[in-house]
Length: 450
Image 1 (cartoon, rainbow, N blue to C red):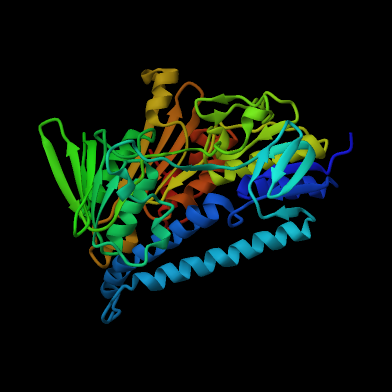
Image 2: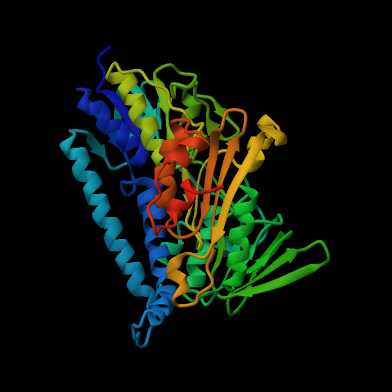
């Protein structure tokens, strides 16, 4: 049978675009459907605009530090609409770049939703399109808890479009999205209350790093309410009234017109017409094997829709490996074992490999040695500001292998990216020790720990 396309990609996010372009480089005829802005969550509602907001939120501390170095800093005033307009301009610019890249790769773009009619046929807008192979790369979407009044909250997707800055916001959730926006909004001058169900933010990360960041956030003025259960949200004349239950009693928290629900994301599988195929859904995500193949041999999926490691670089890598394998005769496998990541709270976290808790659980507590360094970076000594950096290495003593490297502090993501290469290659503590330090720098602590 002759098909319209060798490959059709559903979703114009990072993973889908990476796969489409790579397959086209190998000579495949490729089509891609995306009804929204190109670039997916990362470019439009995630990594990019959020990181720009992080930069904006750091200026108050930079102004304070500048005075200690002899600079006279005049009147300071933050204008939310100016920032929001700048973010939208940058996102629009990036959308255009993605469109240009698809054009140069000869990938045919369909600005519509796509849904399965059968296992080789898609309904794309008002067209029926057939493809020999189909890749699902539609990402994920925010999920809100099922409580009365939840419709009065916004999600992290919505915050980039608020016309005015909230004066007092309640953030529901202690994951990395909620924690990042708590720090961003606090830095920009919003009064922030963060409500979490457990005792700490950032579940799943190294315990010591979680404590370090939570302590710093509280010192910066963020109100963290732990062991709380959300009961209901009521609209008021001035904003919202949020009812929570603590172990002792019920409490009410008042905010202005904005309450941010950051309680997680889930794969965006609705509306794809998967019931017209044999594609299987496990725990809300598309089930795939190590080759990104679904239960239907010619239908594949990458990225957040598979709910494995939900990070943009992972989706890109998965998309390229899929294309290399299926169209480039270069079979490969994606490893999710050692994936560096960052959390852009204030202070920032960078991490790669096993946490202390994971290493001890796998190898036994007696075989694991922890090296750590906690200090005030030189930058803060002159202005006399209190800011701490924490670095730690998790080492397996019988082999001397570094199982994990973790950092909380300025430029943690930048530093851990380089350290991740060593961890990925299986470096030992002796290898770290043999590396000459760059002085004076914070990063040198990773090669001088004793």
